[in-house]
Length: 304
Image 1 (tube, rainbow, N blue to C red):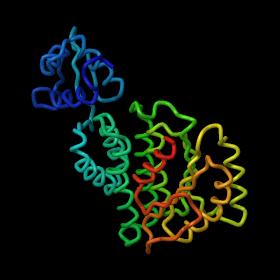
Image 2: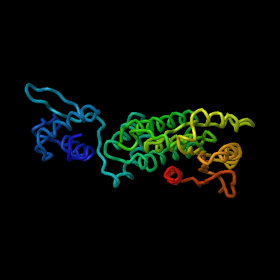
Image 3: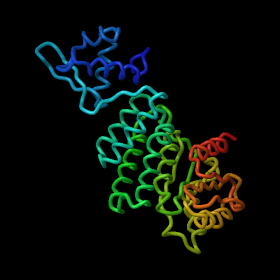
Image 4: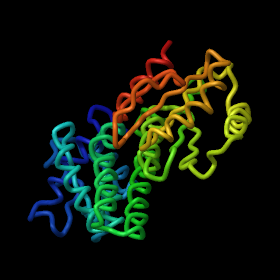
C-alpha cells in the first residue's frame, strides 16, 4: 500500500469522485490526482491496487488512461454505517440476490469494516431473520436453504479478505466449533468466521445432531487427539444449541473429556431457546445467546 493514506479512505474518495456526473465516461489519473489532492505517483499506485481488487475498470484512449467504477461499488464510513449496511444487506437477502449480498459485504470489507462487527451487526441479524421467516411460515425449506447459502457465502467473503487481523494462524489460539442442531448451524458458522478473522485456528464441525449418540464422547476424544495437542496451547470447544437437550447432551459428552486436560475448555452457547437454561454444571462457561461474549471469553482464555 502506498504510504500515508488508509486504503479504505482512498477508496471512499475515489468512489465519490468517479460516481459524480462529471465522471460518467471515466477520469484520467491527472484529474483524479487533482480531485483527491494527491500526487500523480501516489494516485497511480492506488488506482492499480483498486483495479486489481475489482473496484475499478480502466481503458486506454490514445495516450490517456481513463478510470471508472465497476458496477456495484459502494463506499461506507464505519463505524457510523453499520446500521445502513445491515439494512441494505437484509434487503439483498430478502430479494434472494446472492451476487448483491456478497458484493455488499465485499464493499464493507473494502471500506474498513471490522470483521467481527460486520458478522455480528450485519450478517448475523439477517441469519436470524431467515430463521424467523421460516418458523413463521413466510418461506419454505427450499428458500431457507438457499438463503442460508447466501449467508454462508457472505461469511466466506469476509474470511477471504486479508484485513491484517487474520493474516496468520496462531497455534495457541484454537477453537473447535459445533452446532448441536440445524437451527444453530449458521450462528456457529458466523462464530467461525470471527475466530478465523482474529487469527484463530478453527476446527469447524457444523451440524452434529445426526452424530449425537452414546459413543460421541469417544469420537470427540479421538478427533481432538488428531487435530490438537496440549503443546499447541488451549483448545476451546464451543457448542451452539437452540435446545436445552442439545446443550445437556454435548455438555455431558464433552466435559468429561475436556476436564482431563487443563488446556481444554468447554463453552456452551444457548441461542433462541424457548426457555432460559440455568444450572448446567458440565461445562466451563455458559453464554446465553450473545456471540460477542463467546468471542470475548475465548480471547480471555487464550490470553492467560
